[in-house]
Image (cartoon, rainbow, N blue to C red; front, top):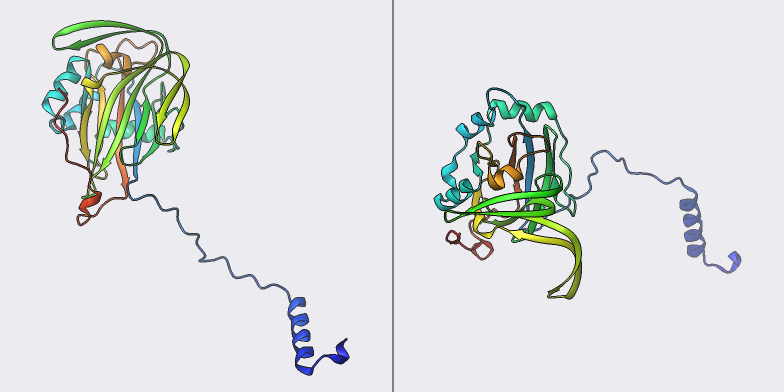
Length: 288
C-alpha cells in the first residue's frame, strides 16, 4: 500500500506516527485557575451566628445593647416586639469586646444551611452562611423542638395564652437587594408545631406536595431593617424574659433566656446606582 502512496502522503503518515509516539507534554498547573462560580445578580449572602452568654452577675448582653442602634427599627415595630419580649438593633463592623471574645473562643467554622434552615441550640457560639435570592425565603431555627410550648403573646394591650405541641421556633427571612449595595431584610417570627402532614400547594409549575407542620405566623411582629455590607442585626430577648422572647431564646434548663442572634450582611451582588430597573421597591409602611 505504501508503494502506491504519493511522497507527500507518506511523509504525512510518518509525521503522524512520530507525533503519536511522542510523550504527552502537560502544561504546568501553576497559575491555572478554574473560573469562580458566579452568583446571580440578585444574590445575597448572610452570616448568621448564635451566641450564648454564660451565667454571671454582670450580664454581657448589656454591653451589646449599649452599642446597638435600636433607632434603626421603626418605633411601632420596636414597641410590638418589646411587648412580646423581643429586642433588636444594629451593630457596626466593630463588635463589642464581650461579644468578640465569645465568638473568637468558639471559633466555629462557617457552614452551609440545610433544607431545615440554620439552627443552633446550646453551643457558646455557632456560625453559618445563609444564601438568599431577591424575595426568596430563608429560615433560622431558634432552638430545639419543644414537646410542649406555652406562649403568652400581647397585642393591643390584650394578653393571650397559646399552647403548642412538638413546637419549633423559627424566624423567616426575606431579602430585597437595593441599588446602592444595601439590602432590606424582612423578619417574621413563626412557630411550627404538630405532626407533619402532607399538603398540596399550587404554583406556576403546577401542584406540589409538601410534608410539613402547622405554622403560627406572627405577622403583626414582622419587622424590616436595611443593612449595609458588614453591618450586623442583633436580635434577642428583653430582661426579664417573657412572651416570644422567652421561648425563642431560652435553652432547656435556663432560668432566663441567655442567647442572642446576629445576622451580618456578608455579600450582595447588586450594587449599581445606575440600574434602577433592578432596585427593589421602596420600603412599605409598617404593618398595622
